[in-house]
Length: 602
Image (tube, rainbow, N blue to C red):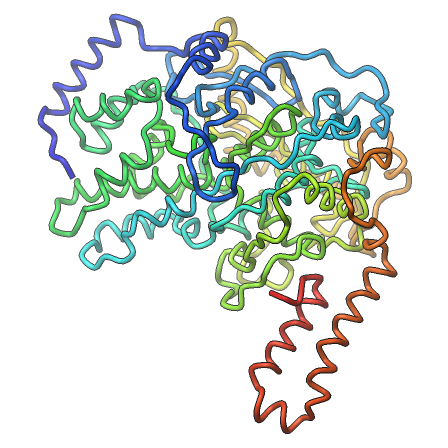
């Protein structure tokens, strides 16, 4: 690691002098940012694959696609004096989500009552219904980048290793998927409605809950909110000098590429991966902060660039002993909700966020449809995401997406695993904070969290929920003080979450059947939702929807099981066990896969 060539005090004094001359740099208007992005000739071309490659292609189009859309997600901006807290940026810069006219007329295929899904006319599902295919999204996996920092293979780094292990973020290294099944991701994005932050399926709503996050990726869902402290006015340049131990020149160079807000992942690895126990304690602390920032940029807070991470997360890594005290899981969920919402806009081509969390949620609740591989090495002490291995067999084309879309249109409530973690509750008990009702927050990203809309996921009868809370959009220039008050109020609600959980009277009664709903729920739901994405009048897919009917589906499974068992029975018991034990095991494994709805070819 390079040594500082200036004292921290001198560097900070120099930077403050520059900041005073221009009164702390602020973001340029959205229109200027888009012009800069559109004129830039430095953007990398993206290979349209699910592998780990830098991806900024299409980001400008994505910004323009969302710029005139208000889809109910809360877009608030902190006081301009705290510019480091703005993490809602894309690969070029942050997005100011504009206001679009609300839907006022019924839409073919639903909703007929437009009071809930007010932005549906800009939704990708509306475009699909009108035979305007977007095709599969480009999705980002940072597994390869994550594995490039090989600190676990080294021996002389016990001090560094201790800081990382005690952070409570290490499970992310274990459970992150190497590939992204973009057909699964794209099909579920088509079901996401940002007004409710839920997936709208044929039988009702489902979502990724705080309990899902805790079980799937093993990071804390309780603790302090991810928020900027009122007295934290340190610039990003000063953060690098203070917390990473670099000098003024190095900090300037690191921040020069992305408007003084981001550093590249490669820069972090290059400067800090060589730390060892022979270095000072302070050097190990700086390297640990750098790695945790790197880890966050590769997992929970992946952005569309695929190459960088926002410096402001360093503010939360100042005290390494306090890192475990933040609600990283809740913040990651807010970030994923936002990425899902933005990706529902019909012109958006790429999605960021932690794809492992989304995919693992799908596999847990709907593995009959998505058929992931089962990891034989999984143990209940591991994050639940480790239980699955995504397949690449879902495909990559629009035709493949149509097939998955029709499977989801044929999905019934009885095919869903509503409570997948029951068997591991002794080691991973249900936390009451899962019933929190309010806003989840990641710095300037604020998203509604509505457990009352998905009661069946908690073993309760689903009732007709109230309208979700949606705060008005505010602008940076005119509402800075209002935003500050709103942020403080939201943080206060989270800090006192015990006073903001769903009341016992509103949790309904326990289900008799996992898919139970109250009388009138389905009638209401079909009025306000768009439960089926595929329009029968339009199709280019050769997929046979009859395959997903109950009769043919289970007849097919039974026939395939018989094909497996007949081979073993025909051998005879003694011959099979003596000469072909591996084949016997593979047969049992295949039968298990078939019974659980997965392919037998594993």
